[in-house]
Image (cartoon, rainbow, N blue to C red):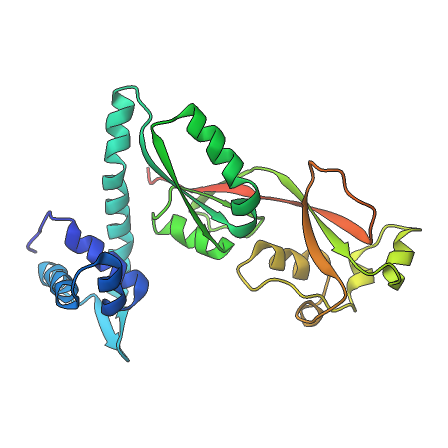
Length: 260
């Protein structure tokens, strides 16, 4: 195997693997399509194996390509850590820090955290990256971010997670709804909501998983529309009187476990 220690072709390989398109990769990298193809060809020639299948004008990783991508992601991630390693050796905290977050903690929690972090470490440039909870996990697994903040969601064993805050989800309805009247006399349960259709977020979102699971709501009901809306409130604020509420864990801070 002919090893080329130039990392740029591998960066091009990662972009093509992520986007599944030479054209889109060329646009993102601001280089020509023939240049992208040449870099991919150089990587494949160096390894002596095809890493992509060309399927309906899309670039699809082969099984070998998927394994190579995992290791390429890790190599590039380690390379990008070098400025931080040098800064640490000089007893400085400097460089760029990518922090991934799902939409809710990314909107309501991350800005405050980053402001405090910047005041403490002014030489660090934080780079927030916002997506769904599922996307954040994918970025961590692909070494595209060292740290992520998501709502409570099932995590793969490669992710090390630490509880961060507690949230409350509050059900809101019109004042004349029978459940609102009932809630004035007792605490509502998931059983009360089982036959009530709720509109929840798409798969991969932490709140959607909670709505169809912890509350006991059937999957049929959770896909419909209703007079109810889920409104997220931080437990640090005093809860208003309304139809009912349920506590849940989350968000959590997750990071990719380093191989020993």
